[in-house]
Image (cartoon, rainbow, N blue to C red; front, top):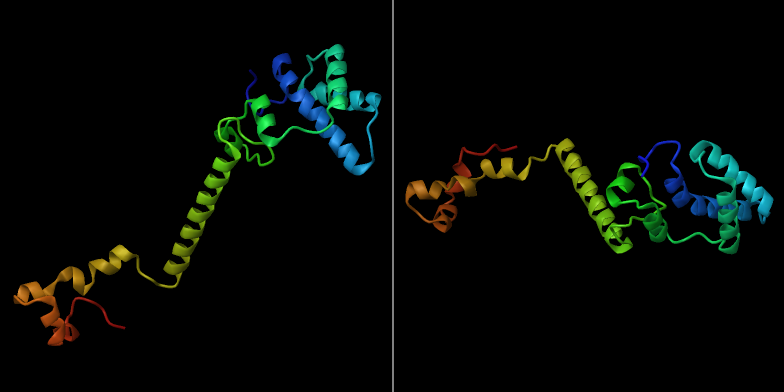
Length: 176
């Protein structure tokens, strides 16, 4: 199988791409100008093949054009992914958003997208807090009274320590 990202494909790989490409040509043409005749579709596909699949024969193109005209609607995103054998990691690396993945279904892709979005929001909020001067929780706790436990050194319980107001004189934390 051809390496992803290569400009031209061998005959086997080209056969995988030809029908979706032909259906895409039909869809684009239908959206802009109406229907595409058999001859025009053949010409468009032939030009595409000159660059991307030079080893495909004319007879194979005729078969694909016939199939595309018989089934003009494009397959679903996951069906195209299975035809192209596109796996999720390749889809992410190539920033493909319109074709699914053959190894991860739509629900799982949506779940992963939500997780990425949530993580990005968390990182963004953390940066915002740091810019505002808020300390990280670990740093805040390291200098906190509850972590130092000065009441233990005095041999009294925490409630007594606070009740006697001893916390007001504690030098371990910085006051603003």
